[in-house]
Length: 104
Image 1 (cartoon, rainbow, N blue to C red):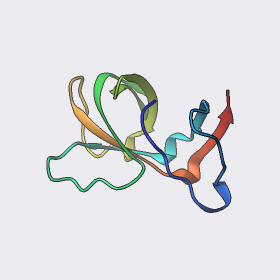
Image 2 (cartoon, rainbow, N blue to C red):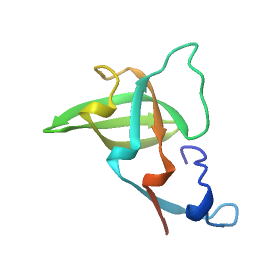
Image 3 (tube, helix red, strand yellow):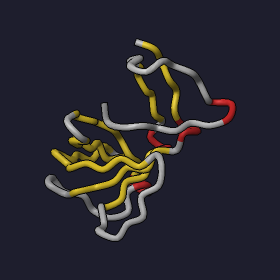
Image 4 (spheres, rainbow, N blue to C red):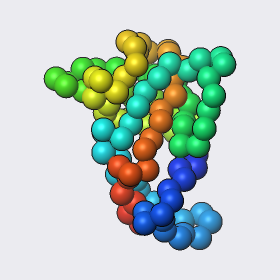
Protein backbone atom coordinates (compact mmCIF):
# COMPACT_ATOMS: atom_id res chain seq x y z
CA UNK A 1 0.00 0.00 0.00
CA UNK A 2 1.43 3.35 -1.01
CA UNK A 3 -1.42 5.62 -0.02
CA UNK A 4 -4.75 6.94 -1.15
CA UNK A 5 -5.54 8.06 -4.68
CA UNK A 6 -8.67 10.17 -5.01
CA UNK A 7 -10.67 9.71 -8.19
CA UNK A 8 -13.76 11.77 -8.86
CA UNK A 9 -16.64 11.89 -11.31
CA UNK A 10 -17.09 9.31 -14.04
CA UNK A 11 -13.96 7.44 -12.93
CA UNK A 12 -15.28 6.91 -9.40
CA UNK A 13 -15.76 3.40 -8.13
CA UNK A 14 -16.73 1.89 -4.83
CA UNK A 15 -14.70 -0.76 -3.06
CA UNK A 16 -14.98 -1.91 0.50
CA UNK A 17 -12.09 -1.19 2.88
CA UNK A 18 -9.26 -3.65 2.43
CA UNK A 19 -10.11 -4.52 -1.18
CA UNK A 20 -6.89 -5.11 -3.12
CA UNK A 21 -6.72 -3.51 -6.55
CA UNK A 22 -4.13 -3.11 -9.27
CA UNK A 23 -3.67 0.36 -10.73
CA UNK A 24 -2.63 0.79 -14.34
CA UNK A 25 -1.28 4.32 -14.68
CA UNK A 26 -0.43 5.72 -18.10
CA UNK A 27 3.08 7.19 -17.87
CA UNK A 28 1.91 10.58 -19.17
CA UNK A 29 -0.21 10.84 -16.01
CA UNK A 30 2.81 10.83 -13.67
CA UNK A 31 4.83 13.95 -12.83
CA UNK A 32 8.02 13.65 -10.78
CA UNK A 33 9.40 16.44 -8.58
CA UNK A 34 12.20 16.64 -6.04
CA UNK A 35 10.71 16.76 -2.57
CA UNK A 36 11.13 20.27 -1.25
CA UNK A 37 10.83 21.12 2.44
CA UNK A 38 8.23 23.82 1.78
CA UNK A 39 6.40 22.01 -1.00
CA UNK A 40 2.64 22.17 -0.74
CA UNK A 41 1.37 18.62 -0.96
CA UNK A 42 -2.15 18.16 -2.26
CA UNK A 43 -4.11 15.00 -2.92
CA UNK A 44 -2.74 12.39 -5.32
CA UNK A 45 0.86 13.07 -4.30
CA UNK A 46 3.07 10.30 -3.00
CA UNK A 47 6.51 10.79 -1.45
CA UNK A 48 9.32 8.28 -1.80
CA UNK A 49 13.05 7.62 -2.08
CA UNK A 50 14.65 6.69 -5.41
CA UNK A 51 16.36 3.28 -5.45
CA UNK A 52 17.50 3.31 -9.08
CA UNK A 53 16.98 5.23 -12.33
CA UNK A 54 17.48 4.07 -15.91
CA UNK A 55 16.85 5.89 -19.16
CA UNK A 56 14.81 4.17 -21.90
CA UNK A 57 14.76 6.42 -24.98
CA UNK A 58 12.01 8.91 -24.20
CA UNK A 59 11.30 7.99 -20.57
CA UNK A 60 12.98 7.25 -17.26
CA UNK A 61 12.23 4.03 -15.40
CA UNK A 62 12.37 4.91 -11.71
CA UNK A 63 12.43 2.33 -8.93
CA UNK A 64 11.20 4.00 -5.74
CA UNK A 65 10.42 3.10 -2.13
CA UNK A 66 7.08 4.61 -1.10
CA UNK A 67 6.21 3.80 2.49
CA UNK A 68 7.23 0.13 2.75
CA UNK A 69 6.57 -0.80 -0.86
CA UNK A 70 8.61 -0.83 -4.04
CA UNK A 71 6.97 1.22 -6.80
CA UNK A 72 8.46 1.01 -10.30
CA UNK A 73 7.18 3.43 -12.92
CA UNK A 74 8.11 5.16 -16.14
CA UNK A 75 7.96 8.92 -16.57
CA UNK A 76 8.49 10.74 -19.88
CA UNK A 77 11.52 13.03 -19.91
CA UNK A 78 9.31 16.15 -19.97
CA UNK A 79 7.44 14.97 -16.84
CA UNK A 80 10.62 14.92 -14.70
CA UNK A 81 11.36 18.39 -13.30
CA UNK A 82 15.13 17.90 -12.82
CA UNK A 83 17.73 15.09 -12.88
CA UNK A 84 17.03 12.28 -10.39
CA UNK A 85 19.59 10.04 -8.70
CA UNK A 86 19.38 7.08 -6.29
CA UNK A 87 18.83 8.33 -2.75
CA UNK A 88 16.85 11.41 -3.85
CA UNK A 89 13.59 12.13 -2.06
CA UNK A 90 10.86 12.73 -4.62
CA UNK A 91 7.14 13.30 -4.90
CA UNK A 92 4.94 11.76 -7.57
CA UNK A 93 1.83 13.56 -8.76
CA UNK A 94 -0.63 11.15 -10.35
CA UNK A 95 -3.40 12.50 -12.57
CA UNK A 96 -6.50 10.33 -11.96
CA UNK A 97 -7.60 10.75 -15.59
CA UNK A 98 -4.77 8.38 -16.55
CA UNK A 99 -5.61 5.62 -14.04
CA UNK A 100 -7.40 2.33 -14.73
CA UNK A 101 -8.44 0.20 -11.75
CA UNK A 102 -8.51 -3.60 -11.80
CA UNK A 103 -9.63 -5.88 -8.99
CA UNK A 104 -7.21 -8.57 -7.88
